Length: 76
Image (cartoon, rainbow, N blue to C red; front, side):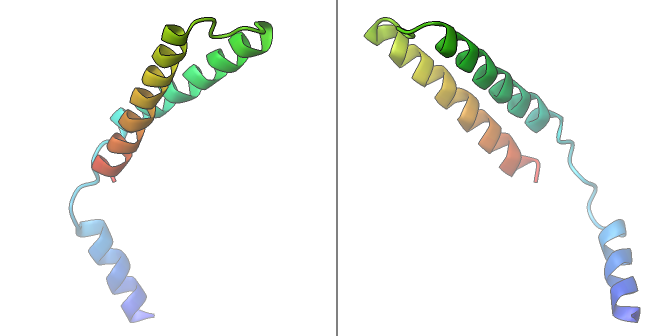
């Protein structure tokens, strides 16, 4: 029991917790992007219509995923 109390006390007095705001923003953008893509994709049979548009969607999605993962690791 004393070890548990000592562990909790050490955790509370340890380094300050970093702000997770960046992760919340990047994760929220990724989630919103996924919803927008799904709505557009369900309403259009040829989305994205061109090869350039497909590459653009993939690039934007990749950037959002990388940003969310990076901010998750950085703010952990």
